[in-house]
Every structure is written in structure tokens, then in C-alpha cells.
Image: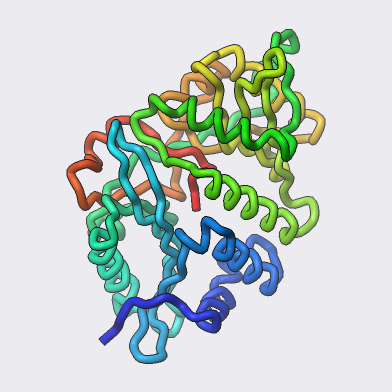
Length: 325
């Protein structure tokens, strides 16, 4: 009878060798394996990220990544199991192994204190809906960079984020999202993990394929907003835009800096996930509009009334692209 268990180092290597062509992003196989291991070995990763296999004896039938995520839903703290990289080896397909593995994970999570499960589906919604997940609003935007207002008159100084700025970024995120109806909570260890993942990815991808372009806005030396973007030619990808006190002027200054930077880089479009509801007005004011995503669809399964998925679905998009694991 199949059982769910942590993957061994050899099993992880075998899985990654087979998924390399699918998710390797142009890395060599060794770099792809090192990239995943670096995430698992960060302080946050050691506590909150594991590779699981569904196996019978020594035979791996299916596998997935499982993350332990902390969130706030209204005034309640909730724990989510983040599910990613669901994969069945080619030789084992067609026998329902992935479905059985996911059912076992969903049965186990409540016993481990999780209030629900979260995933981002690349295969549509129906497969996961049959397992108890609900599709959440999932939108994106894409617009010519030239349409973004490039107002050069601003009381804010906007410059590239330096290593010494990240504590300010952490504080801004925590303060600015305090009134959001739903938010993934990010400890300092999580932020360190996210930066490590970004750095490891950058150094292992083919040269010139991607370039982080992160910005911070200041007013009289006080940090008041930030934007996380990545240049993936020919587009600039907006990952996150956070400002203090919901100040439209700060958002405009950051978007203008992004627009000017994109022009220098030769970018032609600004693209990204549509942001959570509280932040969408900044993009609307810049002339951007949402459209449904066809990939990375947000889906949540609830095990607890504290996590009301129907109520959450009414809140609009819930996640920044930086929340994708």
C-alpha cells in the first residue's frame, strides 16, 4: 500500500532530473538541483519546506513540494499548507497516483494544525476542484510601457534597493498590509528565504535572461514605499508594489521610476499579476486593467470555518506574484 514520506536526497535528485526540462528555466541540471536544495537549506526552508513522495516500497509513484505558510484572514491567524510541483514520473502515470497522494496530504494537514491548503494551478481548475479546492480570483495585466505615466516632478526620492534597505522593506510590508482582509505573513526568516531564492535563481539562469530591478521611495530620508520588479526581456515584470498609508503619490513616483528604467533597458511592456484588492487602484489609476490568468490559478481548500473560501473569493485577487512558491 502506498505511503506518504519525506523524499530522500537520491529521490529528490531523480525527481528533479525528470522535471528539469519542465521547470528548469534554462538552468543546467546541476544548477537546477542546487537551486532547489538552496531553498530547502535556508533557515526558513529547513522549518517550512519539504519534498514529499508517494511511494510503494522503494518505487516513487508521485511527488510534491509542501510549504508551511502563515497568514492572517480578517482578525484570525491561519496556517496554510502550500502545495507545489505536483509530479508523477512518466512510467507511473494513468493510475491516479497524484490524486491519491494529494488526498493523503489534505488528510494529514489538519492534524498538523493547518486551516487550509493553497496552490497555484497550471492545469486549470477542475482537477483540483474535485479534490475540494475552490478557484479564487486570478488575474494579470499587460500594457505597453509607454502608457505608464512618467511624471518627473515628485517630492520623493526613488532609488534602487540596497542590502541595507531590506529591513525597511519588511517593516513597510507589515505596516501597509495590516488592514488587508487577507495577507500572507512574512517573518524576517521568510524574507531572507525569498531573497536567497531570488539570488540563487539569478546566478544560475543563463546570462541576460533576467535581472531584478527593485526600488525604494523615500521622503526626507524616511522609506515610504517600494516596488519589486524583474526585467525579463522584452518585458518588465511587476512583482509587488507597497506604499505607506495608501498614498497615491508614492505609487505614482514608483511607477514613474519603473517606466524610466524600462525605457533605459529597452523593455516594451509592463506585465504582472493583478494585485490584491487594496492595491489594485494604483494600477487602475495608471491606466492598467486586469484580465483572467490562464496559468498559476489561485486555489484554496479550507479545513476550518476560520478560513471562509466563499468570503475570500469575494475579496478579489489575494496574492502578489512574490507570494508564489
